[in-house]
Amino acid sequence: MNSAINSQEKTVSALWFKGLLQAATSLQLQQSELLKASGVSEDELAHPYDRLSLQKNQKLWRAIESSSRLANIGLRIGEMVKPSHFQLFAVTLMHCSNLEAAFTKSMRYTRVLSDGGHYFLQKDIELALCYEPADESFSRHQVDAVLVLLHSFSSWLACRSIPIVRVEVRHDQPESIEDYKRIFNAPLRFNATRNALIFDPALLEEPLSLGDQSLAGMHEQMLEAQLALLQKLDTAALVRHYLRMSDDLEVDREQLAAQLNMSGRSLQRKLKDCQTSFQQLLDEERFERAKQLMQQKDYSLTAISAQLGFSESSVFSRAFRRWSGITPQEYRQSLKTSS
Image 1 (cartoon, rainbow, N blue to C red):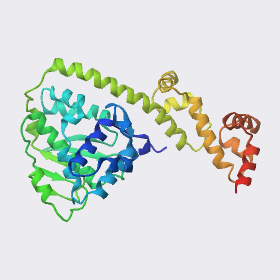
Image 2 (image 1 turned 120 degrees about the vertical axis):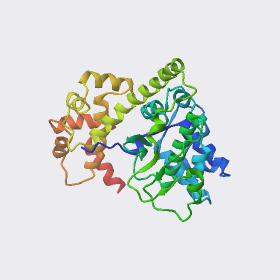
Image 3 (image 1 turned 60 degrees about the horizontal axis):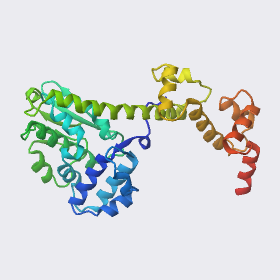
Image 4 (image 1 turned 180 degrees about the horizontal axis):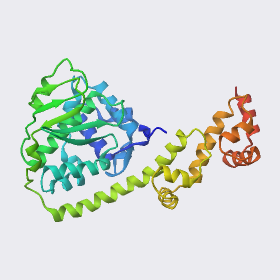
């Protein structure tokens, strides 16, 4: 089974979306046009901790890129997005004891902002802060924006500009690199094996002047609550993905729970938190597959019911009528009438 989850099931915080939108409007792009292109209404941005689909976030980026005349729009967007856009997330990191603690904590909570990618530290002779986008649909502009933001966020936490030893990006070298030189003030390596900012490892021990463990603990509890909610929502998405990727649907809740490294009871509870159940999700997937299979005229109801995990075709027929209000035969007849 493929373990990747479709990007359409991933989400971003309204805070992240609004940060990008405000940065784009600061660069003279029209907010109304960007919202229309991304399929997002003003109401969807009213509550800062609501979520929008990653797909809409991608549409926003494509609209920004097509509307702007700036060759390196990602870098400029990254400059305009500020830590203050991220409210609780930023304040929590601000109270860490040093940069290493801030980096470590931010890696845990980055999902609160976006499922669009993750970053991590590689420590050797050099220190690399690496970024991996969620999937191949991410453009070089998106990667550039994140790298700029990671640097500005680090400098904001340290209350000084953090020097970069080197910048590495996987994408090709663009026609103009003046913005890269100005923003990063460091050697550049294009067509690299990773997207990364290289720092002096000694920076990790640098204390943060605003560190306050008592305040950090209070804010962290709030972030943990947001993260827990996201993880609950993930359970239903994981089950849907598992069922979608399964060759057959003769599976029960205990088998699936084992695949997800939890007990059947835990799975039941998590799905209840998502206002659904294993049986409901299984029925949804069976119904979708049944409609697809019945479009194949040479596929008998007996074969379809077996593939969907039903013991007998009569059991399948009753289930299909419960899902759709009509029998499988009537559904097939409606296909002939509409063709």
